[in-house]
Length: 200
Image (cartoon, rainbow, N blue to C red; front, side, top):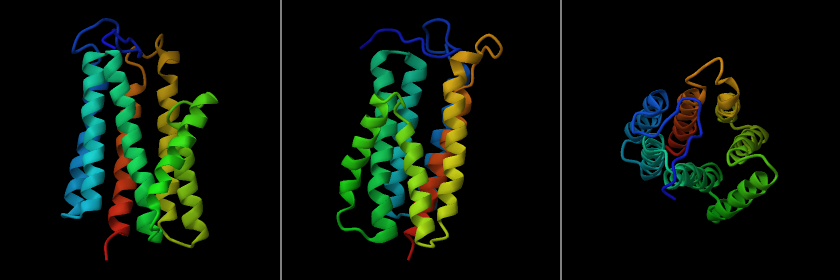
């Protein structure tokens, strides 16, 4: 688990500062966490989301600084934790569903299924954002546009993440840092939506 991981264009050797663009751009998650925390104004739902984003920041920082296998697992796990928390909050906030916790195993099953089919760990999140937009659109809830925009941004973010290795010869720093910036924006947008929708 302590094996060195060289997964991105920018990293060419071990060392804490082997990925400066990726490490600095990871701060986008910290900024998102702080903004959501302030927006929550003491609301526990909003602060839970802010703390979850903070976990994504901490895990991502560890991964891009240390570049070890255990840190890579932590990085992916933190993103999954946020997604599971969000999956539970969405039906509770928008529909008052008493059994909203069931959304967590459902989303986890979707994530495992799409990963086994070659879609990676994040395709399920894109599908989820599309589903949220469709569900709210069908319910004539104006917040559907928030998820449509977040889904479009996340689709671009995923594309840039996938392109990182393919553009090494032309863009030595790669495109992974853009994944951080756009994904940080997505986490802020969807968290802001929950915070606003949860207000009386």
